Amino acid sequence: MPKRKSYIRFPLLSWTLRQQGADLRENELVVRVYRRTCSIPLPERGLEWLHRQEEACRDSGGRLTRYVTIKGDGEINVVLHCSHSLSVEELLENLEVIAAVDVNSSHGFLLFVYDLSDGGFRIRRFKVPEVNWRRIKELQRAAAKSRSPGAWATARCALKKAHRRRRAAVLRAVAEVAKELRGKRAIVFIDVPFDESLRNNGLQRTLRSFAGRLENALGFHGIPVIERTLPSKRCPLCGSKLEEAEKRGRTRVMRCTGCGRAFERDSVPALHALKLFIGESEVEELAGKLAKRYGLQRPQGG
Image 1 (tube, rainbow, N blue to C red):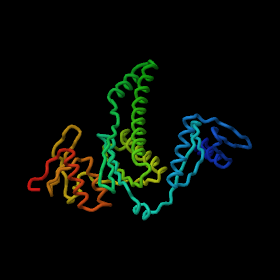
Image 2 (cartoon, rainbow, N blue to C red; image 1 turned 45 degrees about the vertical axis):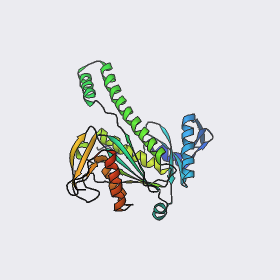
Image 3 (cartoon, rainbow, N blue to C red; image 1 turned 60 degrees about the vertical axis):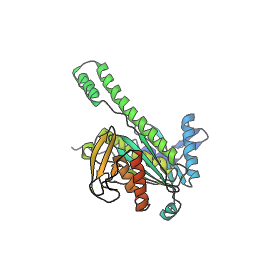
Image 4 (cartoon, one colour; image 1 turned 120 degrees about the horizontal axis):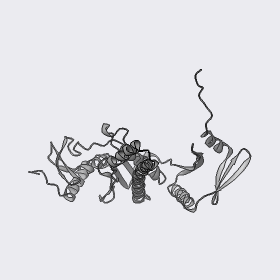
């Protein structure tokens, strides 16, 4: 006889909580389930975080929705959702800053911020810690051959440490980007790689989680985030193909096969994003400033 599928699962309790009621009262989470009321004290750090997020949503003119969920392992989460009714016309009319985030598998995250008022720009880089996967695989193979429980514990600890380091780097980068843009009328483009070599890879999941976390963090400040594949091998000025000319440490120099201009590869997606909002002459002027910043040679005869 085939086994029947179960349709009553523990996560159903999260639906029950929303129906029965859950709320925050001062420093306690009050949950009403089956005619019973439970009060769960909240840690001071978590309460301060909730208040900061609520204030950020109110300051940006958003509408805050709050509800409670429970995971399968019994973990209780207070979920905040901040929605804005700002139209595209209103956003573009008062736009102050255009930002582009290049999520790169080799160099981590690059933030490019362009100020529409004076044409100034800022560039910040956030690195993702490298993981010694060879050592972790060796520990796992050694644990598989060993009968000692301590061998498996060592392998698990090494793997957890690697995940914690990457997660901490992502959270720090998200916090710094949000700090840079909050309080400004901005729009953000995120260029996330979709290379086949990174499919189902731990690094790819880390990069994707950065995009999701950043979109959520900036949403509380009323800043829209657009995920869009921005070309890095096409010239932002003439549209011709870019080829890698040289490599200086972590700086990759791309040269256009058409106009002969040189670009720093990580800044090319940002220039393509800016072309959607500013004129070609301004993009060309900015490309010249970037070339001077990275010490790139001008094309002969230009």
